[in-house]
Image (cartoon, rainbow, N blue to C red):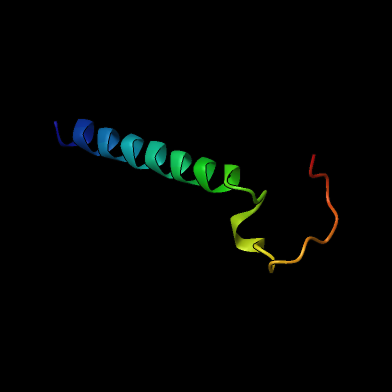
Length: 46
């Protein structure tokens, strides 16, 4: 029973982490830890 709870909580944590990372990368940056300044350095913006 404890193993089932551990797997459930682990899966929920992975899902939440994935959703958070996905949301951060969709808000204008490809990599959230490489967030640049206000100036546009080129790139493939449409």
